[in-house]
Length: 581
Image 1: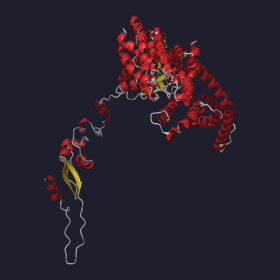
Image 2 (image 1 turned 120 degrees about the vertical axis):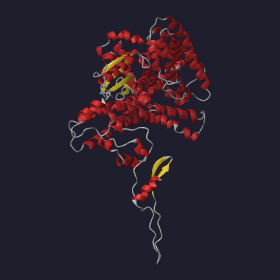
Image 3 (image 1 turned 60 degrees about the vertical axis):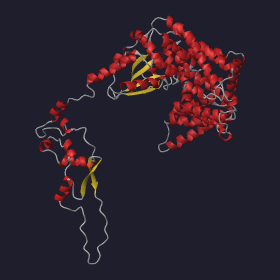
Image 4 (image 1 turned 30 degrees about the vertical axis):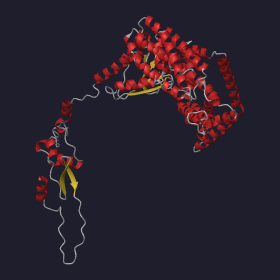
């Protein structure tokens, strides 16, 4: 069962991996739709002309290119973008699902071709072979997409839409929450949200201007109710203190993964978000509500930003109703439960491999620590930012980044991952040390990792230098001392120009200090050495300042006239006298 779930999660991750990097394009299209179509906030027929082409052409090309790049890199991106154009032109429907098929397929074909061509490609003709092979294969795939993939995927989309309409007409759409919420808690939220619901919702929004399918998985209300129950009624103080921060991250930041561990630590709580989402979907269905684009991430801010004109208040009430129902159901369950906090990971430490203990995690100078989650964009990004800010003062040499569990960098030294995703992460980075946690927000294993890294730094003496010992090592009979020591470094000196600083350190050094390389003294900056001929010192803002004397150009002397001697060419004694004044 675990292998099946991991396989489904990996496939769903691949599908969502083509959509999530392009969510910004969906949001741009959603804003254009919400603002400028005939029923929008600011109707504008000219600007509304962009809505159709962006949805029909741009977004499928971006998705197909992303899928091809995931398989074959840059060449996969190009051939995937070319191949999907056939499916787009060959169907009257939006080819988001067709793009998810054509992009990876084209990438796989060009990858296999490149492997084959590398065995016989003539020297000096590499660019010719690469460019022509990509163009020819792209053309053939576009033709195949026009005649086959476009009509086929259009038929599948018609069947899926008919199924959704049947559920809506039979008032059974709320029952989808029975499958959505458990799948989310098992970290399949990106797979079902971006891989399944977004393509269907986009086609609905194209014809109806909005779709309820955008609201099924991204609704932040049910998770909010669970977190509020832990805020008020949890018996464990550590969990209770971490819940308010999770509320902000979930409801405003849209990172739903933050509440999954609170459900997993007490599986009975899953009833609360299921019923809460059923109530929300029921209200959305009754009042005919929907969004004009995907609310990604699932924040209340994104939710309301994608609301059509006139539906903002009702959508907010639907979200809050789901949160209220979820809170009322979760509260007695949390209150009646035994103490089961985020430190529950400690009970599983004994069953982990030795390398999974945070006390065994070691990182040298400049090593990389990776926080990994399913998509590598939500909870892992938050966890990496929090841990980076926490450890940067003690170990500024460490590199803390985030990634998907399926794409952990090969140079990762330590990987921090949630228990549900640990097996996938180990396959991706078998060389790394693993720290398995339950929650990126607050977890005892994160504290253990921090203490281990700081202790290792202190034991190695990173950042500490014994200056007296260093002087003894550098001193020799011919060079009795180093050039600069503590005595030669002065702070709190007035701000001066670089010429004055050089002159003060080199022109009036004390003989004894000169031998020890301690030329710059604070009194030197207060009383700089005399200036050279043609210059004089002036005072700016109470500090000694250097000003260049500008020479005035004089008219040539007339007949019988004596040319005056220019100023500024006095003797050294006159210059010194001027300086003393």
